[in-house]
Amino acid sequence: MNFIILLVFFAIVLFIVTTLLLTWVGEDGHKASEKRKPRFVSFLLYIFVGIFFLLSMRSALIGVRMITWFYFFAFVELLCLYFSSYSTVKSQITPIFIITVLAITQSLMPIIQNKGIIFGPDQWRDLEVTTYIVEKGTFEDYPWIAPGFYSFIPLFNILNAVISKVLGFPPMLTIGTMQAFFCLISVLSVYIIMKKLFDNSMISLLAAILLISTPRLAIIQSLPSTASLSLGLLLLLSFIKGSVVFSRSLIGIIVLLALVAAIIHPIGILIALVAASSFLLCNYLYTKNLVTQRITFMKNAFVVCLITSLACWVWKNEIFKSVFNPLLRFLRSFATLRKSSLLYYPQYQSAGFEIFSFAWALPVAFSAAFVLTNFIKSWRKKNEINFNLPLQIITASTIAGLGLILSAFLSVLISPGAAVERYVSTIGYALLILPTSVVFGRFLFSKKKIALLFAIILLSANIIIASRSPDLAPFENPTFGAVRYTFTGFTEAITIVNFLPNNTYLYEDHDIPLASVGNLKGSAFITYRSYQPTRVVIQSFKDNSFKPFHSKYKNAFIAIKTDEIADQKLFYNFVNIIYSSENHVMVDPL
Image 1 (spheres, rainbow, N blue to C red):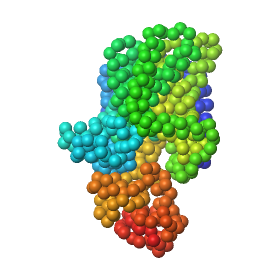
Image 2: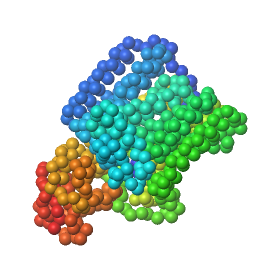
Image 3: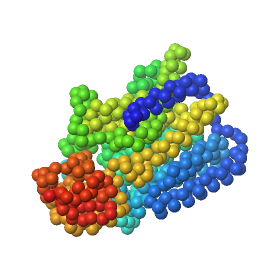
Image 4: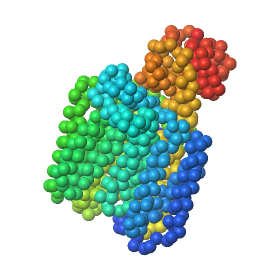
């Protein structure tokens, strides 16, 4: 079975079982235990934390994490949950501190494994822009920025450049530091959101754990979208705080956060807009006794975010197109049901990655079970649903998140080449963290041992599987095929660019940043903006299906991973070797 089939299978099975258990369990109280926690729990927690960091140091040295690292990662998180079930102040602070440290460690491990070299192509793009701003003091003349979304203000790169200048950090170190900062903001935002809604440390901790155990929400790269996602979660926190206790100063904070999020990347402001609109819609449709102050604040917050974002996006035609063209392409895929070019093939559909569909399915299944049981309970009592604010917000987040994820996956099935699933599903999964943590909380606080055991097994499996997925563990999945620049590729690229003339076509394999290194050294190469055409060309050389003497290879240079060439003897008969090592070969096709 492939990834999609298993995803549907896991989602349906988990949905049915979770719905039955939720109906059986009901809504047990979310109260922390008043008992004094056993001393051995604290001792065990600190021992496991120590072992985990020893394993992390070993992983940094050898460049890959063994399976035991992921087991201890899960064990420590489960112990933190148990630790947080007690009502002492120490029991509230220690677990979230440890989880935050674990989150930052997980976030930075790929860079540490890669010997301090950033590995994503988008990160290299931002490194180039940041380096240019540091050296020139301006971004206006940098050729990459125009005419895309960042042609207005590349705020993310400006922030990195300012920090590099002030602290004297190299731009690459600054990008890694900012990654840890955004991870910290995201984890604490989700924790505080659930704390304000339910005043329960375990449920809040569950939300933080789910954030760092959801593949689509992986924070392992410092990107504009990562920064915007963090700001989107802060906006959501501001909405909830303002709904509980109205404060005029919050509107000013929301305006500032919305402005920065909209300039950096659309995803953060879209999270806020979707959450607010869904909350308002659910209140009007399902709740008769509306709380005027709450509704008024949410309306004002929604309008402020909408006006602020539109004001930023309509500033230039290029920005407007960058935001709305993907949305139109997404909607047209449903309207026409026409498949686009199949140059793009989802990497998760490749063989060997089917098990990771479990981590993609669990939040969807739990959230769907939550909203269904909530509706059934309301219908049986012939009552409006969700009178209290926490359940109103959770229900609204669930409905919006499920709708977005369903449409995102359908868009991939209908038209893989035109899909913008990554951005749509990121918003959806960010919203589904809230109901999923509530469902896990009901099971963990339940007096039914079967429900408790079910939750522990599923949570453990989800943490281990998700944290080892290609999104969160890129170097543990070398056959995944996504663009991941390695330290070896980086060092060889420094040598290879010296042999290449300017203004030539360049096809580079997924682990070597030739074009980016060339840009940093002042060279200029012509590459495809999307990696998909490059992937197709390189694959044709790897399996020896390329056409010799083809005109499209004229004046082109191709860098290929040596160990992925199917028949090297046949391959070398039709190419000129420019550079060769045990890792890569640089060729000029005949």
